[in-house]
Image (cartoon, rainbow, N blue to C red; front, side):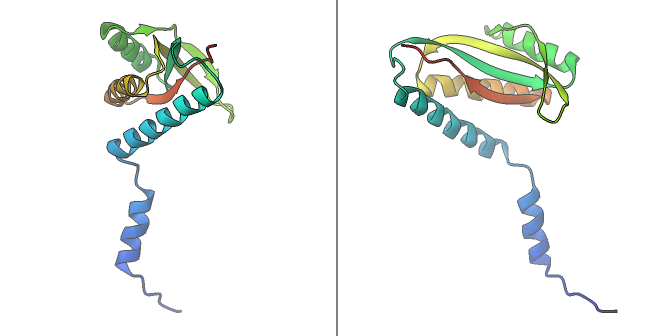
Length: 137
């Protein structure tokens, strides 16, 4: 029988690399994603001065939590869509609703809503799944 020597520092590095990202790291990813989306829309020739329908996607598997989050969004003045069931690529089912905001394609203003909605979803233990919009001419 052979004995392997394990370096504790290697274990710590491996454990750290498997940890969930921090809230700050997730927000930075969302900020980068927001910048990328806005740039891509404008590069595709969409009207920079148009009013866009921004749809923020929120989901989870627990209807009660989803409903509570939707009510919280509504109380904060957001327009929310009716919840719907969605089937994922792996066949699992999630429940989701959108927060819909009509606004200019202003990266900073969009990210302010991203940040507020991300924090709200985290408080309910549900997922903020990003945002999207449609091209405007």
